[in-house]
Image (cartoon, rainbow, N blue to C red; front, side):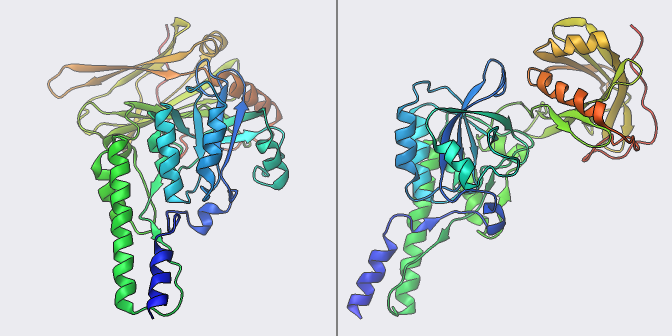
Length: 419
């Protein structure tokens, strides 16, 4: 009996006994070993002036930390952004990598790297992994859509000093699953006590790690309540409140929506003035018709808003190139639909930002004006794809605007006022 007990206790103390790995459905498209490589894309692929990044993807395996350490030792540019896409894995290894990223003052974002040399849908097959694991940079594209950094991956992410989760990416958390290697038949009481001690040890390790990373204890409290089998995807207010992504305005890249009637869109979440609640917004450009390009805006309406607001959008390269008007209210959303001419399209494509100005009536008869900029540097390459898609589109069904989560609009909103 004593021998069996000693074997049990030794098994409980082995590194990697605790995991926060993803479910089978989450892990399906991922390699079973963490992969790290250098990627290069088109100009501004990873933001204004950025075309090179580090990709970290796949499951966090038990030997991941030493590989990441060796790799990063050879990358002198410590501010080259790191894009993470992982379902999770080994917790202890994630803590080590997270602390390594903190020592580098790393910039981390959640995003998927699509290697050009790999055939569509084969980013994780043996041939593609061989390309990624070879030395040197690989040509690639970036997308945040459906990207994830779940479970133990989150600890890598928390290690970075600059963190960004795009509105169309996800970060999910859950409590870790304790994996015990048991030999023999130890008494139930001994097994239960050992399990409880291991859980307490892991909880202390997580609490210590998060405190060192400057993350609110509220996240640790939340993780303790989330079952392993049912991960919780952090909301934008939670990302902000916990200190994970503290940007007041988070936006996606411009993304092509293929189909019979193609369009390109950008989604954004903007923090409201009070509290940590956020407002969802979307912009959409569609195929050119009669020398004009449809431009539409949709956004959530603040419950305190009375009367009709106005929306004006100007290209930063030429502020005289402006469009906007009075949006149509549809439930809890406002939708503006208009069109811009070729000169404004050229100005938009040449701009770094779309300058947005919203004027909202207040209950006291005054008006509140909100100004913010929407990034446009990622628009040009996607615009080229839209033009090609529009040329090849055949049928033209009913307009898909507004796309989910916006409700269907049957009336035509006011067009932009004449200059």
